[in-house]
Length: 601
Ligand code: AP5
Image (cartoon, rainbow, N blue to C red; front, side, top):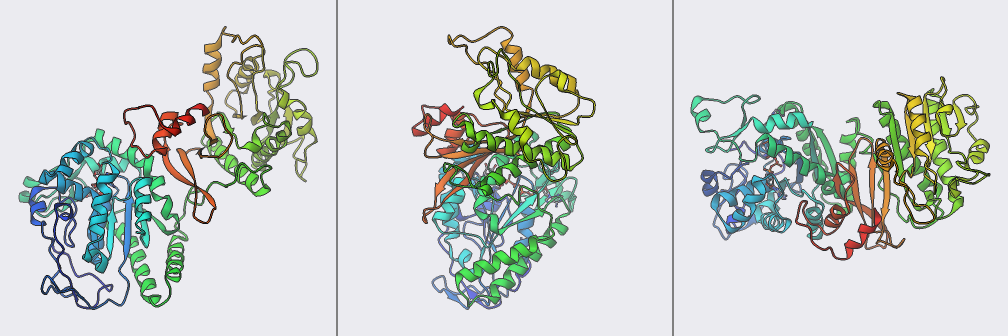
């Protein structure tokens, strides 16, 4: 398909010599449309055609004469779930900006169609909707990016990187885009788009049975469906996308532009086009200044385009604070975690959830290590309770009382005195305590008509005593009102003789599991150690579990990078696999050093 003239980026005559054309490089020629997996297109592109209209003139194969354009070529990445419209937008971008479109999906499909060794390997993965191993895809992308046309005209990388390790490979090769576009489309639309997608093997054009009606009966008769476009495979591709999306994009957060891809393709393109034009202008203006300034100006122009586009609270998220093994934590770090817990819990309560639990075990919130840390736990509870009181809710903060004889008998040591601390705490200048905030213990008798919500501080079983019966009675009495457990420990504990109480255990555990996690944060260490921190798991309702790896950058500073995300809390095997960079669902075998992580759960 011939595209219309590229725009301002390439004002002057450019002569290029065609690079050799290994089969890998066949699919993404300047004029290639996507989906060159079909034999016809594949073979027609073994030697990539070069543009011969007004912007590029082909002379002898040896000559490389570049009358440089007034601006630096654009380097763009486009990402999004399957069928979010990447290919459709890429066609339009190529037409307007003349970038070299490099689609890993197309490159792979071309290999499959040509029956190459790579294609045969990739086929099985693609047909089942899984990701093709990194080493295959990365080699393909590196080869394609290194070609002269991509260097001269700029590139549009589509569908790569899709995992954290692919993004890392690009970083190592010092390949970075100017802009990272994410097409954001809700799941239900995606499935419809995939299932209705049809491709024209002659022109490579993408159609949709419902959204883009066919131009003629002749075209209709030759249209084909992609083998991975069945509903079942689309769902699996979507799940794999979600597992990796955040990890893959984390390196580009400062240059990311999220675009609502659920609108018509013309509307979506309008926004894409405006960002790219703005970027092109910025690059043109600052060509003579240093690289750092280019980067800064680009980031600023991206930030400007982001303004007013309404980002989610996750987009504003600052990243996990570092040096968490240094105790006591600074006020800023504590506040970070309090805010994180409050936002997640508020979202869950606003969504009508009524049985919730918060699990957060940064060292500063672990009173088992040091009883004095109970103060940090109380500070978190106070922040959470006041956040609901500010909304006019009457909150009861409850700590379990003694469950046996004598002052401390039957009471976990770290909770001793905590009720007194709550009573004496500063609850703000507005007299919230006694009206919007009340302190109580755990049990049905605590539930009063005027209460709107209950926060239970670290309810836990003590040796020989089980808090669950009181807790159950309380939640039954609370009925539809939210009950939030903070750092609960509801597993049975063995008695001093090491014997576990078994009567009614199943029901107790079932009851404990009926509370839904609205916040989870846990640091990862080698089993049996508390140093060094290897990573972290975080979940903030309603988002997915995020697995982070702690890395030290060359300046000696540490940071957390996201490795993967999960719908459910990841198992130790899944954590190990992600740390080792293995794809999901690989056959388990005895793990190496990361096997030590298995002790943490
Ligand atoms: P790939 O081909 O890249 O598939 P994908 O990412 O799943 O994306 P799609 O091509 O399905 O969708 P799209 O976003 O381009 O949407 P389109 O514009 O066509 O990859 C295929 C496979 O290759 C992967 O599953 C994997 O196995 C492997 N692979 C690729 N890259 C890899 C990597 N880096 N690492 C490992 N493995 C890799 O639009 C979809 C439909 O919607 C069309 O019918 C279109 O007409 C319609 N449509 C588009 N825009 C709109 C709109 N605005 N409104 C209405 N309809 C629209």
